[in-house]
Length: 118
Image (cartoon, rainbow, N blue to C red; front, side, top):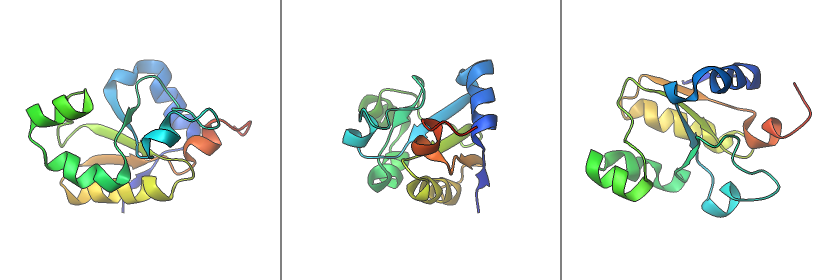
C-alpha cells in the first residue's frame, strides 16, 4: 500500500521546492480544468487514471512528447491526487506496482485542497 500525504505536508513541499516532486492529477482533463476544483498547483501534470499504466509504459521520448514533461525516474517522489481521493489511491498503487519507490497519495485531493479545512 502506498504512503499517504496530508494537505499540510503537501503544501509545505510545494512551498519549499515543488521541483523536487512530481505532482500528478489523475482526473479526466475536463475535471482538471474545472472551475469548481481546478489544479491544486501550477506544477501539476494531468494523466487520467484510465491511461496511467499505458503512459508509464511509454519510453522517455514518447512520454515527453505525449505529456509535455520528463517521464519520472523510479526513485522520483510522485504525489497523486484526484477530486475526492479514490482514483489517487488507485494511481499510487498502480505506480508502486510499476516499480516506483516513493509514491504518495494525497487522499484529500482537490476537494480538500480548495476547502477551508486546514
